[in-house]
Each structure stands twice: as C-alpha cells, then as structure tokens.
Length: 167
Image (tube, rainbow, N blue to C red; front, side, top):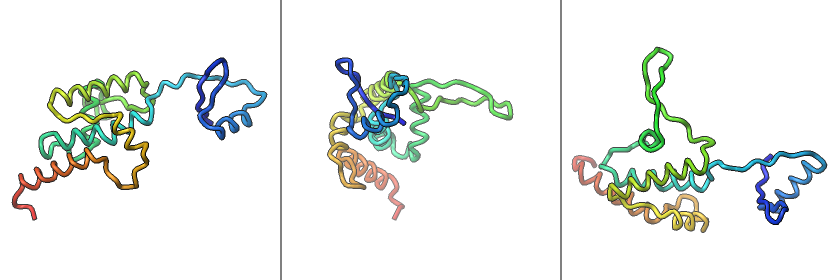
C-alpha cells in the first residue's frame, strides 16, 4: 500500500481523506517505516514523454525519428550516459540504464540537459508550466496539446512537400 503524506507541524498530512483512512485502518497499532519519495514524479515523466519527445520529433530533420523509443534511447545515451557490456554471444553492445526508479534530481538534470540542447538547436522548447496547466484542465480524450498540434501539422506539411510522389 502507498499513502502519500507530508509531515507538517510534527503531524502527517495526507493528500486525501480516503488515503488517510486506509492508512490508519491498515497500520493502526503497528510500527511503520516512512521513507522519502525521491523518484521522479509522474508529472515529469508525462511532460517528457507527452511533450518533449514529440517536440523534438516534429522539429528534427524531416523523417529522422519515426520511432519515439529510438529517440528516447538516443537522448538517454547522449544526456544520461551509456556504458558498454557484452551480450550472450560475447559481442560488445552499448546500453543505457532504465529510468524506472530514477531520482527526481537525476531525471530533472537529464530533462534540463535535453531542454538546453533543444534551445541550442534553435528548436521551440515546450513550456512545462503551460503543458501541466493544459493537462490539469482535463482535456477530452484524444485532444492534442495545441502547440504540439501546430508542430505536428507543420511536420506533416514538410513531409508531404519533400515527397511529391506520395498520394
């Protein structure tokens, strides 16, 4: 069970009444261990996967990144580091660590490097506050973040113009 709470004025302050009730119901009279949650937040991951990757895809050289997974791996190699290991056949392969369980500090540092690189490439950089406000407004399912829609449409027009033989 996970219950999210903050310690304020020497008391636990839960995010929801339901979480508080469950916590006390399950652990009343028992010893508990409280650990600091240092994992990168879902909001950071959502911003990275839902906006940053697409911003790069749609602004990078036309057709460079058809697969967001390959783009993600390339960014991790470039900005989070990679290492060499051997596969089962003894061949050397370059690999990167998973972001599962990465600390907020490390993920923020990685994300800052990516955003700085985007700026250096003269790419439009996604505004995280505006993106989170849009997400928090609970847009209808399937609705696209407006600046991202504009980038996608521009990308699609460039793709179409570069391949006039396409129907």
